[in-house]
Length: 380
Image (cartoon, rainbow, N blue to C red; front, side):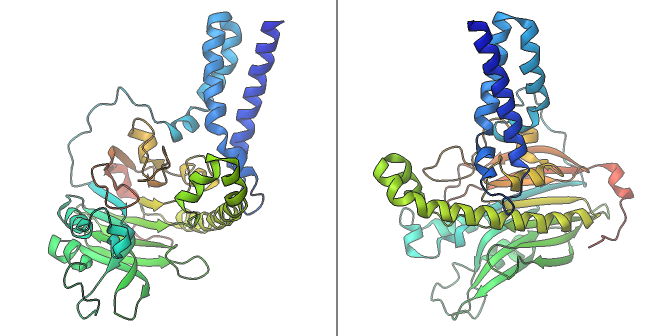
């Protein structure tokens, strides 16, 4: 009887796991409640692995079933918890290698309330980025005060000059707002390789949630395309989230409002990622993607990218790779992706740089020799 119950429970876990994987692939704009089923995927994966261990002790014949499921769904497991304990050191960099850094810089804490803990954080962050050895930097929530702006901050926030020309990099700033004092808000791509093409992709209208790209010419003569994008945020305060699950009163008070914002974010990101995927599918250049997805690895947004590209952390990392610098643990919403032409050398989350609510990420990519056969003109 006990064995029969355990076997039925194993079948239920497998069914739950397969249903959760199906939920990941349903666009939120069509049926947003499926996203809640997708969020249960880590638990279902864990329970299936527990079933493997249980049946190995009881009956290896039965253990074959959850073990086979675990093998087939391992890529989904790696999305949330990467395991590469035997990975060797990457090969030496070549003229086909690209050192890429991505960071949501939170407008360099220009407002006083953002730098209460460390008043010197803007200068420290800008200097760290300027001195970083990365060939290409993709920055979200970028802020710059060009020559002639009237903000009264002097040269502190001349970030485009400091990270760009003064550090030997070309710069492409995608501006979403220029305020009355002349300060610029948006996103930016900095490159030590020549920028030979560029563009901006808006989602209905140009806001801070948009995409940009730069075509870069490597020393080998190959052209690559780097995308930098920032998808719709939840607009949910961290304190509200913590309060909502800390007590029944908090859940009643905050829950409904959080749910509405959660739904809006899910729907918006599903539309935005579908817009981007159509562009990606038309591009014939080798691609590197940097993104503040504002979504978890078990989401439709992440799934659409992971189906087409290598996720750098899932491919070479170890552990959760959390990138959110706040009270919510184990949250990885900042990602880098690479098209199949790239070999990923390493990937790092820079926990030593706490100046934003996101930790910067960096990776090294090497373009395969066969990529030289890629057509020189992109489709889009």
